[in-house]
Image (cartoon, helix red, strand yellow):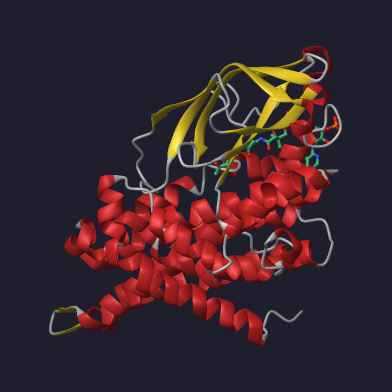
Length: 379
Ligand code: CAA
């Protein structure tokens, strides 16, 4: 097993690090405060080729591997998880799903714009009563011959207000349960499609999370992804890769908080010496460093599984479960090491602590990851 990065991956890591420092850090606190979407920053991320990292260059992508993607996700997430969730959803849910399962026409029409960042995409599975229980879709897509009529509501949709292209999961045939579900591409502005209110969130406040309402929305048949009834499998297969991206986000949040705590502990003095000289602090740093390294190995492992064509349902779920736990624990400890300063916004770690929580919830809660892991090891 060789986890060392090649020259290209090191360059990507450096580019992501520079971008985070130069473009994201300066206004990250203001964006979080004002719940302001990083519009300009996302545009620049697209120019860097970070919004369609794994997409074939013939569709405007960067043609990179999953390992490069998780390395970039980690660096961006160290500074700004609100930006990295936009990057993650666009890369691994929307672009990957379209490239893997979309028709040639769909790729030409949508993927080329999404992979360059000319447009942003959203992945719409969750509903008021279908979060973890994702097969219980109430949104309907009734087959009308050459088109579908979509009705229903989606909740907590990342990029909900800013996206142009929405991948919407809906029930066509209730009798067939999850085998009667379809995934449809719905464009912003289609009559009957409304963007609901923006959510006021605990963390990732710069990201744009909305409910979506569909009232008799007419969607042409050619906008269905895959065969009739493929929608639930599409969602599951796409989310399996998405979880690797969120695991990398969690890793980045943890590593960012750790780096800040390490630096602070060498500057702040108490009882006549830098606080890093007190074992109470040094042992916290030792635990943080060890757990982050363990999380990184799981994240890299799952990315390599995907790149090597191996099954990554299990390794991706383990990476997300563990990295999100490490993110939560590390950020709490980073606030503790910062003491009173950790509780105020200027020092960043309180924001990272708030941002960490969502990594245990979206793209499958930690409990859902345990279902995936336990089913895999027991089967
Ligand atoms: N790959 C392919 N197919 C899969 C699959 C996978 N990884 N996992 C399940 N399936 C298939 C099964 O094979 C089955 O199909 P067949 O009957 O034809 O074999 C079908 O899906 C249903 O599977 P289950 O019987 O296992 O279904 P279940 O009701 O027990 O649920 C679950 C399984 C894993 C709990 C699933 O419901 C799940 O993942 N829930 C969480 C949903 C989730 O992650 N939501 C996140 C929302 S998106 C988001 O957060 C994005 C964002 O904006 C950041």
